[in-house]
Image (cartoon, rainbow, N blue to C red; front, top):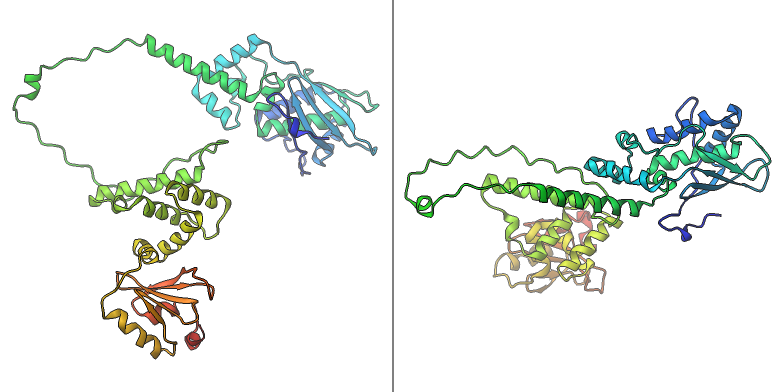
Length: 425
């Protein structure tokens, strides 16, 4: 019965609510404006028993999808008969003059607009002289059932569920009164911009005192600079960033702000920023590697796709580089991407050490030693550490594994393979 595909700015369809346990004596709605709606219903009702039955229908999930348009709430409610009843509740829409007063009150205080965006309805905005919330007798229910009660239990059930819609989004109440969310926000934005421009025009320009150039540039003794403030013991936490439809990921903003604060704190205490020496690719890898968690969640995949696109690489390249960074930081990333020719010494001694550990003869190539089966590889970093890599046999698809070690055999045992099974790698 629901047709969300037909929704427009002035028509919104909401799926049916799940069954819930209201509890004896508990308030049905969770917000003060939702409970104000319930109070208008209950004070205007003529039969408390029908109200109780309607509340029970709502809590038991008898109300199907709800459609809201200006002045009207519509839904099908399942009663005792197989065929559901068509129920509608009408409320009066506001006049243009009422909307002008409402917009003026909302634009007067920036907190009002912020609260609406957070799906909150400030009490001061509801008390601005515009009848946003209904009073007793303002709700006009109608039902296709034969019950002539005011309201019948089916209409009462729809009114109770409407209070839950208002809990989640007060813009539903504003739509019932005649205006859609986008239209209201656009009007508030225009009104706020006009007020700011008017205030700027009315503000008198300040006259700045002038100083002659010869006086400003004349040689004179200047007082010493004050002592710098002590470095705080740790960087402060960033603010909580709100989530907005179509806006940036608040978790990603928090991660960037936390990283910037840590870098600023280090620069203040040591006078250097090691991150500033990284290339754009290295910094993208560092940021992705700092993302907590090991699984590629939807948010992590989106972050990887954004970072990879910014540096002209693929998300798969970035995932492999993140594994290398987590294995050894910038040195680990260099081992992944930069083969080199090590001098004689440590590299040449590695093969006898591997043979002494009952491992087969690894094939050398530049700074790499590869198992003859082609599924395990050791890479010598410029830092003198051995980095272990794994690949599916027969494929040149190497991924960093384990912990770097000064001992090539130790780098392999770090993969979690028993010592007596190294010869079966």
